[in-house]
Amino acid sequence: MIQFDNVTVVYKNNVTGLDKVSFHIDKGEFVFLVGKTGAGKSSAIKLLTAEIKPLSGDVILDGVKVNALKNRQIPFHRRKIGVVFQDFRLLRDKTVYENVALAMEIVGASKKQIRTEVPNILRMVGLSQKTREYPSSLSGGEQQRVGIARALVNRPSLIIADEPTGNLDSATATSIMELFDEINRQGTTILMVTHSEKIVNDMNKRVIELDHGMLIRDDKKGVYNIED
Amino acid sequence: MKIRRPFYFLKNALKGMRRNGEMTVTAIVTVTSCLLLFGVFMLLSANINYIGEQIRNQCQIQAYIDFDATYDEEMLVYSQIRNLPNVADCEFVSKADAMEEYRDYLGADASAFDGLEGEEFLRSSVKINMTDIEKAKELVKAIEVIPQVKKVSNRQDVVQRVVDVTDVIRNGSLGAMLILLLVAIFIISNTIKLSVFARKDEIHIMKYVGATASFVRQPFVLEGILTGIIGGAISLVLISFGYNYVIAFMKDFLDIFDLIPFMEILPFMVSTTLIFGVLMGAVGSAIALVKHLKV
Image (cartoon, rainbow over all chains, first blue to last red; front, side, top):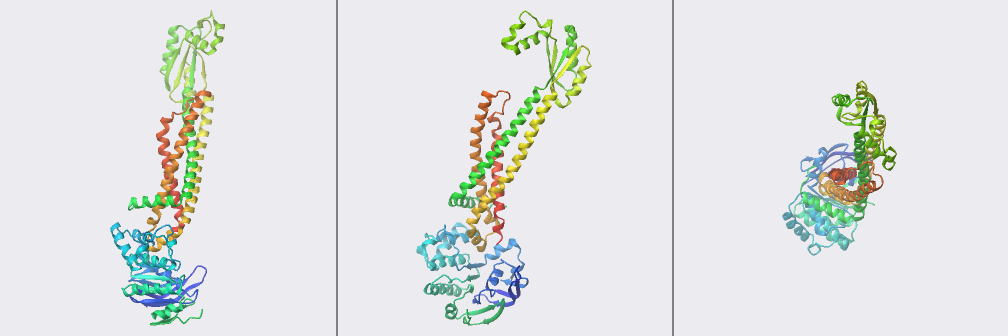
């Protein structure tokens, strides 16, 4: 599903983002990507979403070399990935329904498909009663559920979650993690960046740790184990 | 750029304009101001051309015939002139006609000539209109060699000077219009940049969800085009009121030259103003988006 092959990223200011990193993630896996600030987690995500290109090495997703994509191919590549952000990134002037529908409009889905799929996905994330609400009237947890629904609605094969519980209290974070677990059980691969020791230890999933751009740990059923 | 689902984008563009109300109003006011100035220069340039044409048409050569020539000799001169190259048309002015013209010119003071006839002191003449004013000198030379022609008057020098001045004003207006167009595109692209900046999160999210560059661009470009059309329409209304006022003023106080009637220039003004409005909006918004499309 995901293959990093000896990937090195060096930014314009000569800072090394990743240093000869190699790993492989199978379809349907749930993987935590952990490490201190500046360890290279964001670089790994940006490589997958084709925001940056590696200096050397290959990033492969579903058999496609992401670093070899042409600019016009990138939007279609991104449709295979659902991204969930720490700060939710919802459009304030669109309702819950419209925020989720936007993702389908962008890929050119028909009105009929949108009318069927959006309520389904909102039901799945537990927001059936909030479709007409605006983000400002929702709690943090509810906003993140909208973000998850938006990431899921086009049925991507991979969900990348960048600190999805970073802005949420512990109880809400747990319920959001249950939702991710449910999504994963239905077959979607999940790659999650987090600084939450509790979440990583509770979930008991695979953990990949980066440090100074290098892969220093890859545990099948790992724990957080980083001194912040 | 291919427009897919035009109504979807039109709806989004209108929504965007409503949502960013203040920014939309600023953009429309900017476009209106630019197109208003643009229209003024355009009218100035068109009217300078129109007046230049009138001045050219007023450039006549007048050939005076020997005082002692008989009527037959005068007619011979007239027919010789008529057959010369570069003569569009010509008119024979007899001594009596000349007297009549002179009396008309003097108006109330004409009574001083009471009792006198033109035959006693005025010459017959031929008034000549040219097909090509630039070749006036050659024509004058050709007329001067005709026997019985005593003098040829030619206002071509004065007229040429006026035509030169009108050329300068016209070229100046065209230059000003070009500069104005560039300034307008710059201002509009900056105004739209603010609107794009206010919605950069939306663009960012759209790019993350897999929106193509043209999908992101289309509503903004449509917004630019709609802004151009609205600004163009407002400026046209203002210009039409202003121009009709100027025409009325010129008729009342400065009745030397005619200005182009408004209805005659309206189709040109409407098409040019709207084309430039649409162009400004579309190019301005496309420029404004360049940076934000690189995610």
